[in-house]
Length: 203
Ligand code: CO
Image (tube, rainbow, N blue to C red; front, top):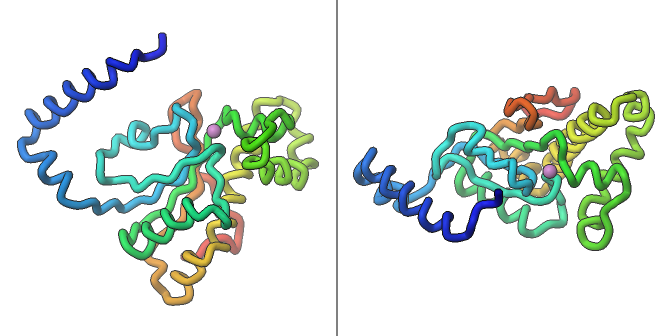
């Protein structure tokens, strides 16, 4: 049954009281500053709260999420997040995290999305065409879509390297961060670290 609105408020009160009881001064400390080591770029999907999957606390993940975890080099929202994470917060790791059973990936593959969403995920449709031979060789449709989710994450890492922010950081040797490609297997709850193709790494 979907959660009722009022539960959000009552849950919040309970959670804040528990936190405070466990660690007096927790919220005073939390409100002072953030010093996250990680930038998480993920899908907006409600099943993708990475802090839950990694048991991380408020203050540990700097987050950008959009439909199908796109790294769009023309998205001023995303680019601002990336710039701030790299140059101000100086995160140590940038994680692009997709997931299996991604509605955005499925819709792109099947050509089902229209309007703004269709426009947003059209790069995945192009990617599927680019990798048509590999994808068509996978008979099982779930596995084929899983593979497309993986290819999508790797493509977004490629895009990350094309951004001015990452380029500038690499040129100035300020690249004190590693870039990671992950997919979350929702059927097991496990993170899968994807190997990056040769040449797609700076460490
Ligand atoms: Co998704």
